Length: 495
Length: 119
Image (cartoon, rainbow over all chains, first blue to last red; front, side):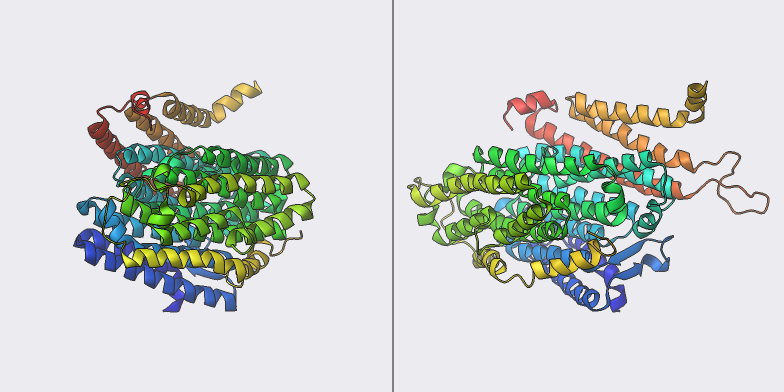
């Protein structure tokens, strides 16, 4: 039974999503969602412990042996991310019930749950598959589900946001397929391990560079790497709060993993460093994201958009770690994927609580939140502070590794940029915190008088505590990331 | 002479690139959401041909196992592209559905007019 876990953990959410579409009873659907997510968490943790003991697992889908058949390959790195994604989705769906009832029309709720699970299945598929084309199919499954989740948002601008994301996302996926097609023509294989073993014998470099460029740009559109981030702020701002929290903590992270995989496991150091321009571009774009998006975030008047731009900036930190490309830099990236996922889930769920009471996402409505909703205001403050990277919070851990990596490379300019962009984060977060604690509440700000549902408050608090806990105890985040980087990304390479 | 033979021998790739660029150009340059989707479809279709055309082997038959033939075209790209076509249809139909909903809510599908309403 356990040898089929890699397939089962993708199948469970797909089956759950179909069941939800058939049953269409909101409470029952929520239960199906929670059960599917819980069983995926169980599967992924079992799988991680298996991988941690015996090393990478190769699973032949449908009994067709790789490289002919589709291979699912679970190693320490993607097993870690699968655990992270499934935990995040489980926590967010536990929170979702009342928030969705409040935010979207009753007849759309089952569609939302269904798409939520389908998106989860797609994301886990991208993480676990070892086949280039299969990754594209899962990328599209998760993206299509995402477009629908965004368009369900109550604001009518959600439709335009979903449309824009559809156009950009499809262009990104198509560019990715072009890249995969070129690799297929050059190497004659679609199995990533197989490609990696053949790619170093290729003498014709130009098509190889072309495919690297196509794949990088295609995935960068999905990552929302600056300046390809245009779809992200509107998509985050107008989708239901639960959807925003889910997307912010999982979807972009999975795309980053895909990029990481292509750069370090498929193409490998020899090729990505044979042309120094490539890494310079990645680093320049990361720095542009850290500065540009942070500066734009300062001027936002919509709280969700503010944190959406901050997401773009934080993605810059993660890709910066890919560009630094030494032991500490890669750990920084891996840890920041996990940490940023926790932080953004906490922030957007706290905002979800505010939206539940006030029905508004305008930043002015946050004024005096410290008095009207002290508990949620504290959660929002703490999780925002960890976004800056204050010592004792998760943000500090990842930035610490990034700074160490940059110092090792001797890139002092990057170190200084990291510090300055943290100051920019301080400005936009400071603006929110100032409004929350040092302003008089507007009259009639609370639209809904009844108390916040307990589970929404509890889950927000748990996630906020997690941003502090993982900032002190790094055994579950940084230490596991170290194992992953040592065993997977740096295996067989000399750095 | 070299250039001409190059052009003729790999004319399929020039067609693919032309289709690809024109599709992408329509997506970028047109403000009508419907036309954008047409461009997107064109862009995706060009990729299908990009996959199919290297699979063809000169004088090869369709990949059906029989004793009379020894040279087959590769069936592999066709299988992949069948999947990609399904994905493309799903994307396109979702896009069209969104355009219908946008038209219902805003009364227009021109991007210029939509952005005037401050997005």
